[in-house]
Length: 398
Image (tube, rainbow, N blue to C red; front, top):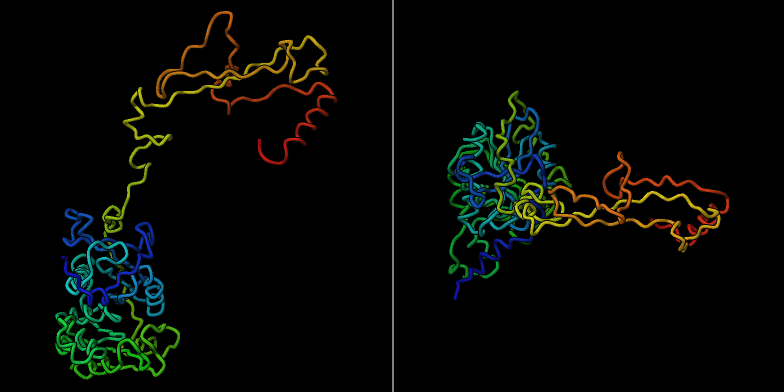
């Protein structure tokens, strides 16, 4: 019987994806674990959002909460870019969105560290111009990165001391049997970067005392913001005192430099995602839906159907008395449908002999769409008959 980690299911519920591989053009990138285009199998590529801001000095590495993916994070990241004029790189977790894999502590941290390494080695961005921002479960990988790397700043929104200590808030001493995950209380003591903690006192998911304790354990320059009416999932931009003003004052944003990001074009290649499906026009599909090799086969190709209109024969009777059911041979002539060989071959020769019918005019060869009606109205009585036919046919197309 396969072991099911129920706690991991609670930590990473992996909601249904809110975006597709074709969404966010020029902003959705795929980072291979090798950091090289020469070794980039789709199952080893991590989707990320890269939002660029002209002449921005800082990049914010955003690690989202467990109830959202990149699609749900896009609006927040866009406001983050516009409000503080920074570049934003948002990382997807395994099993979330279109990212392959299963989310757990190790796989989430692995994706987060990969994105941080991508900033340094591929984008060549200075480490002291990177700001790491984690929200809720994202505080775990954010604190782990900052504990090992000195960056411009670390931001924790609604953080927790550790998974075990969070469980203790709900199940008491039974939490001692829980395997530890994301020991933020240990990692925060190794953080040497400036720390901003934002944790609302109205948070009913993670008590704000967790954020306060992390603030107290940090030895670096730090600031704690604890709004009275802020909840766990409150919109951080509804009240400037929650997040915007502390960011502006504590980190001195915005700031600029005259070097823009140089992003390799191959990072935007959708084929780096396992969710990519090659369009029919790229596979080489015929108009009938058959692939090109099949269409070339004479046994499987569709038949060519040619429709030729036959010019009208001058009437010997009074044309005003001509009717559609005329059986004299001089009424409206039918069209001839000719069935030929498969598509791609030469058209069949026209019939000869006494049964041959005149073909289309030399300048009007082809299908029925090229046929023009050159027959003119003979007199007023024909016009009256045509009007009656139109009235009976309705307003719809023929």
